Image (cartoon, rainbow, N blue to C red; front, side, top):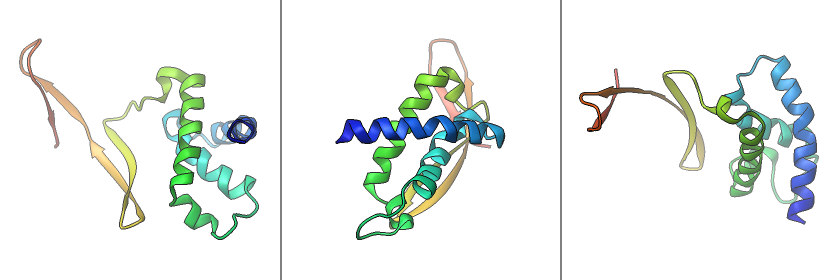
Length: 119
């Protein structure tokens, strides 16, 4: 059953990725947006739940993992953000919270400690 669902999911990713590309979504931001698009458009009904509740569940995490693997396989290093700000989502009391983390590294001496500093 899992492999059948995975195959269907990947088939849908082809047009979802084209849509996100036409919408100028950067490659490194597409996996989460593709997962949400898949749930919104491709899943008609979820028994005993709503789509919004499903997006906050562990089952949604499994979809995101399959999609992220597919994107890494397709785009490789392009999946890594080129920004100095990393975005992510964590759950806090079962609610998604968007994180924006500035990243800079400062190397004092080669082959020694590298420090992560926040402006």
